[in-house]
Image 1 (cartoon, rainbow, N blue to C red):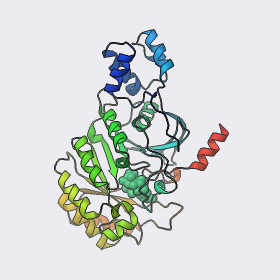
Image 2: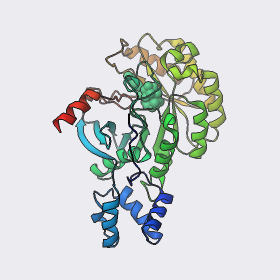
Image 3: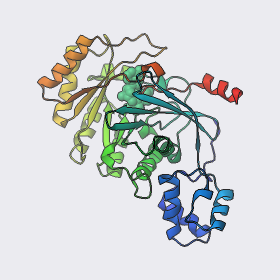
Image 4: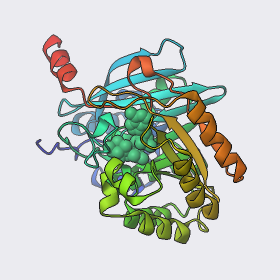
Length: 356
Ligand code: SAH
Ligand code: SF4
């Protein structure tokens, strides 16, 4: 895939880049923050809307730069109304998916960080097919900014659980986290943001350092022994459970919030009592909580969703050990887009391109 030129796109710039831009354009430094606020807070369609900038500046910015890296293609609500899938098109014609999940007062946007995923967990649709490319910080933040704008500022939480492995696109993910939190950016509190990883251990250390332990960390565990985990999550062959546990033990004191282990529960694969006990042994010393995600069937694999009894048994085992547990509702299955199960649908992309 060609490398897309995002140099002239303003979505994704930070304070330093905005200051350079102001200097280049012969503007006083305070204009940098104004420009950033028009981009991120107001998410304007055109610089003509930037009413506190001089007319000549508006004109120049409009002709010299492009504001957005994404455009909205489609918005599709699930039948139960709890989630909405958004499809965006990138400048190079690729499709990016995000999901808004509404539960009570919480409105969570699930963002994608890559087109496809190189990790290739066997039960995950995102890892099937060819890897496209990393998304830029601007492309990541724009998913939130667009949904925020369309829903009149209602986004309360952001989870990095869409397509892609955030820590495999480290630099852009960190820049996106900075913009989401910056006062001139989306000004979101760090504990409202969660990064989910399949366990690239050296990058977990870098991530915790970068965010000062403030952004929440979720680790996709899915198995409590190396043989099983390597089969389900191939990155485990490189960074095994021993190393993962050691890394998490090292960072968990500097994290301001509990670690969450995500556990995709698959019938007859990782749903025995022994599996549950194994997860409890890993979670307990780290004071971690566990989020059980009942497997959501994908076309390519013959796995099955676990029975309700098994889900209940898992819950019981964690309770017995005093471990907090949540069970994710499979919201949005009917739109094929519960968070964490997004996929590249190239056929769709080609069809839409033809339809114009
Ligand atoms: N790459 C990151 C974040 C995206 S995946 C990670 O793996 O953590 C977000 C979550 O959805 C992961 O825990 C993943 O294992 C889970 N998931 C993926 N496919 C699934 C499926 N078919 N059913 C249930 N959960 C799934
Ligand atoms: Fe990638 Fe996460 Fe899917 Fe694994 S579960 S293939 S790491 S997106």
